[in-house]
Amino acid sequence: PFLQAAGKKNSSNLLELPEADLREQFVRGDGPGGQATNKTNNCVVLKHIPSGIVVKCHQTRSVEQNRKRAREILQEKVDLFYKGEDSEVFKEKKASEKKKQERKRRARENLERKKHFKEMQQLGKE
Image (cartoon, rainbow, N blue to C red; front, side, top):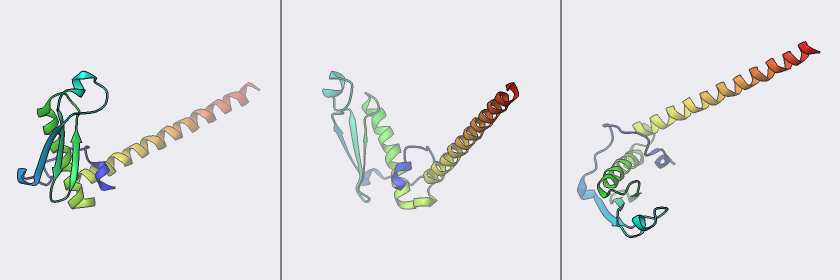
């Protein structure tokens, strides 16, 4: 459940990943893109050997950009795996969820006010 929060934060407080602990593969990506996707091995599969966490990144056509992004995502997932609720990524995710709930609550209150106002207008016309 913690690993779903990864991919949300760029922080220097994350655990370091030594290259010796990583296994990297380049495979063909999938999804839309036709020939550009089907004939090039620009999808990066990165595995953190000690924890067994695997990340697959095929966000761009560039292998270098995919390698960089895969490392960022893997670093966040490994940080979450080892630190759990103490991780900066987890804390930021919780704060983001709290903000979202507050926005929803305000929107609901606003809708109720508008509904009440319309009802009062209807009563005034009659």
